[in-house]
Length: 254
Ligand SMILES: Nc1ncnc2c1ncn2[C@@H]1O[C@H](COP(=O)(O)OP(=O)(O)OP(=O)(O)O)[C@@H](O)[C@H]1O
Ligand SMILES: [Mg+2]
Image 1 (tube, rainbow, N blue to C red):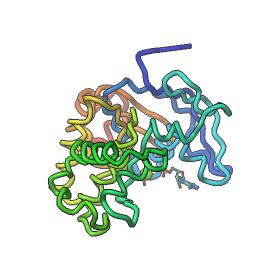
Image 2 (cartoon, helix red, strand yellow; image 1 turned 30 degrees about the vertical axis):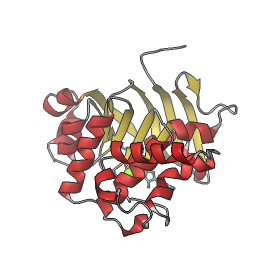
Image 3 (cartoon, helix red, strand yellow; image 1 turned 180 degrees about the vertical axis):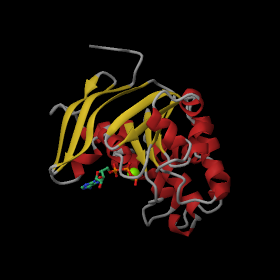
Image 4 (cartoon, rainbow, N blue to C red; image 1 turned 45 degrees about the vertical axis):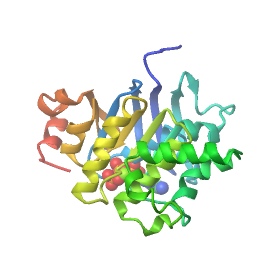
């Protein structure tokens, strides 16, 4: 069934690592150009769920997944799905900045070159545009050919976001993207994400409640492999319906 309101739909997703059931029937849909925060205590399945949305769990041995996930109305676990294309459209940013040990320029140009783009002027333009969108251009424009590893953690993370943007995703998955960063770098990334919301759908895992309430439109609270509650962020943080959500956001556990 098509539903144009959502860019990603997941329905009754169960995921097992070997015999251990890490997701116990999660159904959650995402509207385009909104930011959704995934919150919940350590081990509740946030990263696992995030990875089901672009099939990153495929890379982990002995994983079994049941249920459905659709991206733009197409079943992503269908054998016909091209996972390379899927991961371009549904890009991912990790907790630890993970630039390649190449220059800043080569990091951002990498995906374009892999895709066969040869026009240097075009690549230059996309690199610049992506670094600007990722709010790191001013920091790096005079040293594009220096190693990305010479940058600060916050700059590296923004270069990693530029690397994802260069390949024109429509959805960006972010797994605790600022938890390794200082507050100023985190604030820069939060502001950038709010700016990017004009053009992208974002799903962000965070342990930082203030961050979730500052930047997200919707919040999903996970506990022990279950989606306990989903709603508008303001509602979740001010009037949660479930006792477990209330306990978590008020710091009684987690
Ligand atoms: N690669 C893996 N192999 C086996 N079990 C895993 C793997 N990754 C996660 N798990 C297990 O799945 C469950 C959910 O883990 P997950 O990493 O999704 O939690 P999380 O909510 O992201 O936690 P955190 O906040 O600590 O990052 C945990 O019990 C974890 O031990
Ligand atoms: Mg995690």
